[in-house]
Length: 48
Image (tube, rainbow, N blue to C red; front, side, top):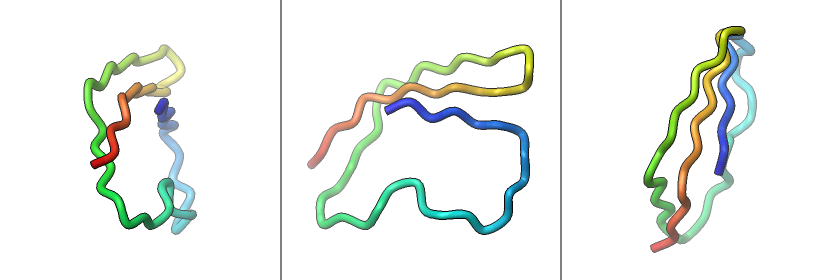
C-alpha cells in the first residue's frame, strides 16, 4: 500500500480503510520526502 501525504488541511474527510472483521498489519515502511513537501510511505499489508 502506498500512501502519499500532502501538507493540506481538508477537514473531516473519509476513512482511508473501511471497517473489516480482520486485523490489518502494515509493515516494512519505506518513506520518501519530496521537495514540494509531499511525503510518500510504502507499506507491506498483512492480514491476520
